[in-house]
Length: 282
Image (cartoon, rainbow, N blue to C red):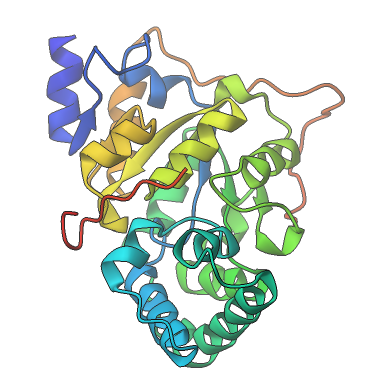
């Protein structure tokens, strides 16, 4: 256990305490995972602040003054559900119009300025070299995802994708995570989700898989752990170091539990509020 803790510190990992963690050792997350399911915005691309600013400006145009801190507390939640939490007295039709307007504004003024986090493609190459499979589960729409795939260069390395255009409920509902697992044809026991918000962790729990948090979504470690993350990394690139460190342990071999009917080969690419904000500490 001391060796696992030392390795965790080396790779920038925070592990949940024994009181709150699930029973298996933290290193088993890396060594036993046959597939990693990644969130995108805030995890692979630096989209959190542009998204918050776009929401703030959009809501202001409708006469609603909402702070960045209040928006950030719900960052990563399905947009319509976020509006339901923020503006419960506004009609559904008006909230739908706000969501539509925000999407238009984001595409026009923000999307092309969102950068990829450094080292994402290199991480995916390392995971594939280890025999891991990779899926994405993201609330963003397909056209936005295409832009993110272009700037990260990871499209050829993906085994499956589930996104907001698939018509499923967004996080913290498990629908997109479950769809990604279905498309990659693996069982939940061999999968781990990597995301930057508590809603990623909640979606993972509901889908029956474990989760790793990253701090690039600006949520405190404590919030991510409380939401269900078994470990927290400084950023997604640290995952490569953790996986490779765990792989040298002799008894750990990555396994993929395939669902019935899988015959191998590459699969085609398809297309409860936590109110603590790292921006203000509230």
